[in-house]
Image (tube, rainbow, N blue to C red; front, side, top):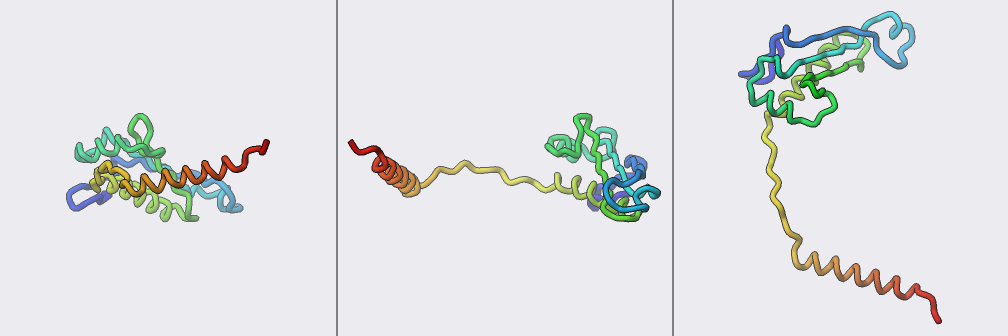
Length: 136
């Protein structure tokens, strides 16, 4: 059971975890031990509340495929168990992040004085460039 919030949990059966060999440097350990974890979680087939599903599918995250499957690869640690915990933690953080309501952006206008400062600096730059012209 992966605890997301006091009311939301994900059963282990919905999380697909595979062990595989890590990439990169690491000597003999990398070649003989399957310590990396490949986690997959299907958003649509999960028991998450509809709000979480909608918000997760709206996210523009490279870890979420077009089919709505979250894929996390954890290979930071040397032990499989630590990588498993890391992958589950990252999954729960991703799901928790959509529960935080985003602030709506309010359109603002630049102040009159800031507009004047901008125009004056442009005029000053224009005068400076005009002085660089050729003398006849």
